[in-house]
Amino acid sequence: MSSASDIDHSELVVTKAWDSSLFKRLFRYVRPHKRLFFASFFVLLLLFAGELLGTRIWRGAIDGPIKDAVGQADKSPYLSELYLWVAGYLALIAFTTVLRYFETATLTKTGQAIVHDLRSAVFRHIQRLDLGFFDKRPTGSLVTRVTTDIENLSEMFTSGVIVLLFDSIKVLVVLGVLLTINVKLALITMATTPILIGVSLAFRGGARRAHREVRARLSLLNGYLQEVLNGIRVVQVFRREERVGGRFDDALKQYFIANKRTIFLFALFFPMMSFAVYIIQGAALWAGIKSIVAVDLTYGEFVQFWLLLNMLVRPIRDLGERYNILQSAFASAERVFQVMDTEAEVVTPAAPKTIAAAGTSPHVTFEDVHFRYVPETPVLKGVSFEVPRGKTVAVVGATGAGKSTLVNLLLRYYDVESGHIRLDGADIREVDLEEVRSRFGLVLQEDFLFAGTVRDNLVMEREGVTESSLQDALVAAQAKDLVEAMNGELDAEVAERGSTFSTGERQLLAMARALAANPDFVILDEATAAVDSATEHRIELATAELLKGRSALVIAHRLSTIRDADEILVMARGEIRERGTHAELLAQDGLYAKLHALQFTGAA
Image: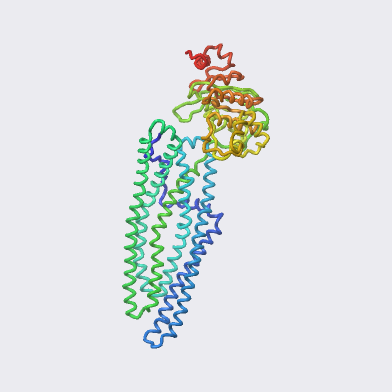
């Protein structure tokens, strides 16, 4: 089990503090929802207009009926006018309250719509990547990028970009209005505002670095958690709960430390921002009082100026929070686009060759195939053999001999390093990838069942699977009685990974799944390696049906299952050492004869 405390460099993506290309890529997902984007902007504009009108109502009430009522014996005429101002202000509050609802609704809807498209695009891209990519990435890391990292981008669009863009316009407009009220007071405010901006800019330096590490640590934590949960039986049987718990605590501690750095930055940032705001407000208050005394400013104008000053300070003060949202989102976007920028190495060629139509058993040929998963370790070394039409070729050998690698290469999960694998004479690298895989039916040693229904797992949304072919497949796979015994039969629920079925039952269902699509070529990879004798007999009967009239490649552990194969290949250390029929290989008294003796007589 891997250590959960070391950061993989692929997790800690680092780019420029402001990456315009990254910003542009994100906005590609905005274009389809530009109406929502502009609707959100329009609602913010109406709210801003309401706030500006509110300050003007305060000024009009103070410099109008309130000022005129001072020193008057009969204040009732002025009170009537004041009530009109108050009524107008209350109506404005009611209007802006409704707008606040639409602000939240439209911003959230915009963010979720964009995130929906991005998450769908990332998931579809991940599905197209070849197995070599997944060999190098923990599952939890990819889950984090598809879920948490993309969700983090939602806040960027709901309370980050749109609001930040609008706040920039808001600051400029408010400054213009302040200049119309009192130029001297506005200039003093403008002279002190850079203090607030300076604090925000100073904060941004550490924010993105801190967020990068938080995202990386969370990804590692999720990856380790996924690994432990998948292997929980092994953890429990070897009593490694304390050890595993200690490693998880270590990963959790590193995540906590990374979060503490962001907390420290904010704990330092907000008091400094508040201090800068007090300086601006203090300077405005001092200058405002002097102007009132000098009769250069009315009380109403000062109150309006003060309200507008708060409208000016608020977006600048929130700049740090907005920037934090952007930095957190950019850190997530970097990680998401790192996956999106990963190109599949196994792809369909631009001009694929055609092969025989489905319904004809294909002829498969391996020609001097070399392959390695990692550069230092060869797995296959010059492997050559063929599976003629309608014939069964079995492959046996010790663990690590390269048997399952033949399956991986034939299905193009990986591409050969050198040599050729031909399907009806065409190199499979020159044929449409989907067409290649559609010709094969695969049954693995531990076949995977998805959460859902039995029917879902057997049909797998393949167009060629009908109700009739499904029933025939169940009968041929010796799985008919198994399904009929379930509550709901084909509509019975399947638990995650098919955990409620035994290994043998999963194999029988996997056989039925392979048969249901009537494949041209069958691949069996250790299909009876981990079942009891009774189930093995049922699987052997199902296998006989599966192989009838089809080409087949059988990776065998138990030699009893391949005695009738047209040819048996014996592999050792990535090479074919022996080949022939069951009788021919026994007569050679070589590796196959020794394997046979070990299984059936217990002798060396």
